[in-house]
Length: 165
Image (tube, rainbow, N blue to C red; front, side):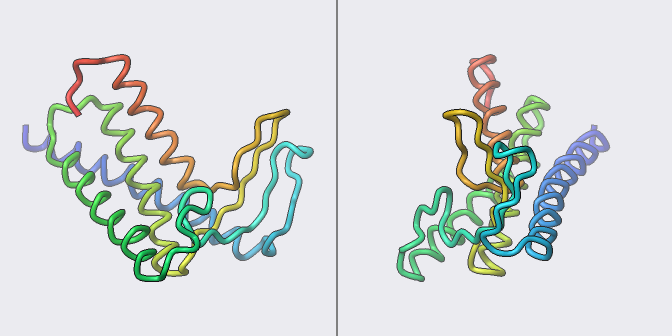
């Protein structure tokens, strides 16, 4: 039983680290190879590679906040929330495996963006998708991790209404 708990915890940590690693490697690559605000068409005008520094949160939220509020809202609170989430999923033994994976994706992606905010004062975003009337904001791999994790959490919450989170 103890070995099973340890294995589960190691896998959770590995998933979180894999998400952070993919995010940070992709951002380092973009910072080194794509000039700021370049507009590189990867697939026609539907999948664009660019390099934009976002000093706020999602879609620029909080960009114009005073520095102390920005630190509290975009660094301090997220650190506390992500560490609490990680602690909780490491201790819980009854959670669904997909749910644990989903939370690990959210945590890994969140930490990936936090690393940028703390080290650089902004988050490097670089992907843009346009398909007909559908157009995303500019995003990065951490955003993909957080979104995928959140969609899985939502799916599991709806599909298995009696599951404990």
